[in-house]
Image (cartoon, rainbow, N blue to C red):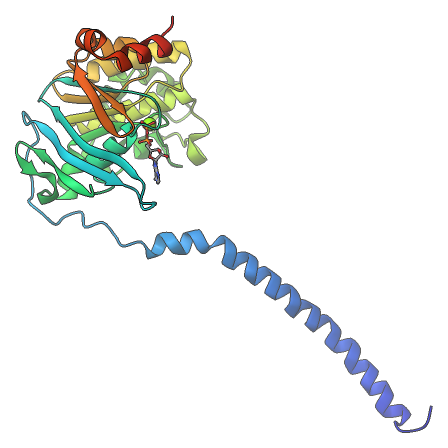
Length: 309
Ligand SMILES: Nc1ncnc2c1ncn2[C@@H]1O[C@H](COP(=O)(O)OP(=O)(O)O)[C@@H](O)[C@H]1O
Ligand SMILES: [Mg+2]
């Protein structure tokens, strides 16, 4: 109005203004998206930064057959620093069944993680036939251990890939795979699937039920023919019909190898050769079911509460 700007300058000023508004909005949105992406990839970056396990260093091929597995004065704590296991002494003689029982949170699964060498003990050592297991190559160690957990993981891919992962897929014929499936009572449902062994199980195995997933995990363990078998409440999340089948499959799988089992069923514990009662990260006592019932009041109470029926 006071003439300090000509009409032409003002028109071009306004046109530039409108032109620049949408790019500024886009830049602002870009920063929002950027910070969202940075947040959601944080975990991915953490995982990528993890040092890789040295699978092959250490003595190659030491057979675990007919050797005693021992945990000697083992202490352990996670990164949080709180002591989880203290002065643990456990012995698993070859070709016997050793059961672990005790209240949840006592440290049973942690013991399995140590044996799998997912973690290293803070003090003490694990030995097999007198040799420290640190000296064996991870690859060799794990290839001789079978692990069936409570909630066995299945990956997107085919049944065949899920059975053979970590192994060389080519070395197993269809017949060999069907054989282990039948040992695990899993052949029927796989045969009924549209593409048999090559059926895609979907993300996290959504196309197979919990009981079927457990039986696939057992078939996987059969295929590896492990010297040491570890079962962590392998049937806890199943309905009673699949539980009966999985139980049968497990009983077959346990023959002729050392079996460590974390049991939630009384029958599994009663049949074990030796039971360790784990409470607050310590072994409160060990022996057969009858021995523990007679000598360990903690165990007696535990059995009474856990297995009322
Ligand atoms: N990855 C982990 N990081 C930190 N603490 C853990 C981890 N896993 C288990 N714990 C803790 O270790 C203790 C023992 O757990 P766990 O071995 O799973 O017991 P159980 O199998 O006997 O129920 C619990 O107090 C649990 O909170
Ligand atoms: Mg557990």
